[in-house]
Image 1: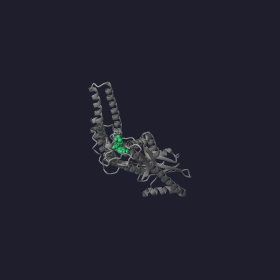
Image 2 (image 1 turned 180 degrees about the horizontal axis):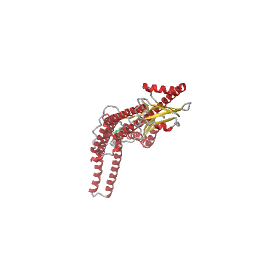
Image 3 (image 1 turned 90 degrees about the horizontal axis):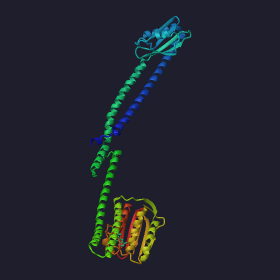
Image 4 (image 1 turned 60 degrees about the vertical axis):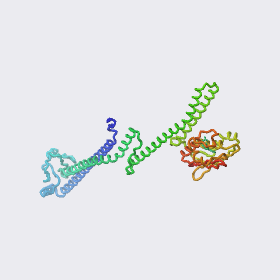
Length: 460
Ligand code: ADP
């Protein structure tokens, strides 16, 4: 049981969010590393520029006053504490080096002496610490070597300050990010967790009454909960509808099934001659056909009522639909001496399921023929009215008594005057269910003396 709730770690949303956070932190680290090395490069470049400028300044001093003037200037700067560079003037016969007083690092200047007069344009002398003395060299007109060097200490201090600030910032970002992220993720995922536990409860118990709480934030998770509730409502309605439909079908089939059983039982009990037994068998077959027809229509009605019916909505020409149905029924009408007329605009179209619509019109026309005496008249008309296609089937038949008008659409209801006609009492129920499934409406008007008029209105 416990194992069921232990999902592989990599599949948890929390871990994935932490993964994104780690990527973000790594990105921050890379960004700072790039900034650090760029800064180090820029500062080193700047130091070299300053050193080079100082070298040029001393060189100009030398050009104006020779070695003595240069020496005097540097010594004076050193004494007054304004000397900021290492200065060395070296020629065969003399070698003077000056270091600013404030530099406490010990640079290994023997290295410079060892190089003699072959110093490169730039060279670095290491100290005991991590600082270096970066030296620019220049050969003077009289062959002497002038060298000016700058201590990297200032630059390194600045870089160290940057590094420390960066480390502190990064630690703060990571801590705040982790704590804040965990808090926000928990808050954001709460509706999802609630939805999950609701789902688990539904899967475990099958009870569809619980609903996901709506926080009212209007975000995607709130929308998900809302949609989930709508889905639960629909499923519940569907299941209730199906259950009712099943109850109805079972109830409606009980009478013909009992009749069928009775006929078979009677035949078994009597010692009747074979012709009578054959007749009983024929009755059984007729009854089972009746039951099958009922079952199929009842299923159609249930499907349409519960919304599980599959409607293949296509645009269709109303005139050709009506003409097609009329063509199917004209032999029976002719046999009865009934005249069928149609009044349909040729370009009127409708978007609906063609087979189901034919079933609707056929049922209405079948009834009209059944309940209209010979030499009567039937008219099928269609018109577009207020964005709706209105189809009417009017007959000059026996009409429907006022007290029956609100009952004829009920399942298995058959009018008093219609008992002599074939029928299951399901035709109009099917018409109503299919028309409603198309978001349409159906009405009936009847004048006992002048026949009936069925009107269906469907969205165009
Ligand atoms: P069925 O025709 O099989 O009896 P329906 O559901 O089609 O069942 O019709 C229900 C009842 O409505 C019929 O029994 C009949 O009394 C009445 N009815 C339907 N259509 C007409 C009509 N065009 N004229 C007179 N009565 C009708």
